[in-house]
Image 1 (spheres, rainbow, N blue to C red):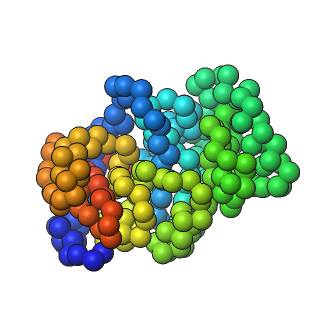
Image 2 (cartoon, rainbow, N blue to C red; image 1 turned 90 degrees about the vertical axis):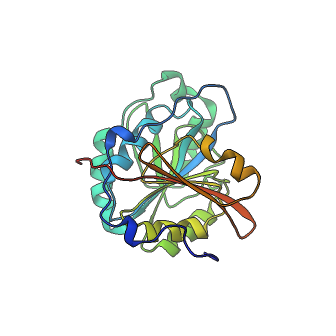
Length: 242
């Protein structure tokens, strides 16, 4: 980043999180739904990340956001695959598997001979292809990439043609997470959480100001960076068991 961090790395060490605190907000009104990219590092709570991924895969057409792309660090790929396979469920809305865009995307996956993870009547996570390769964004179709370093993760996100408003980053070391924040052009970053309300930051963000505050065990931060306003949220001061 071009400016010194508003919090120090030492103040963030050894932080654990309370699963009960990591709640997805309910959509109070119908708004344009925004795609999220989920980035899971090796040193993270993979179970918590999978909790939110599983919910999005089961019901990708409700709420204000949905997971469109997943990046998993290479060191935990097998663990991720095994755990995700046990969480995959058919769509909450059975009509989704009959939608034309979903069926077209699946047909494209087969033509490309692409590797994918799926469950009958549910979402498919397609390896190493972008949404553009699959014919565009389709509900229930998620692209899946593996990466080795934060720099590579940033590069992979850049190859997707989607504009990700939201990024959910899972890493126990906030310094690595902030490296991703600095490298991506998205507006909203959720570190070790998913789709938290940003109303506390709205006024400062609209004015292009830097602002930091703590509220109900969460750190909220907004700041201009390279001509773009970035909002950052992460939980602090709680403990949970995997």
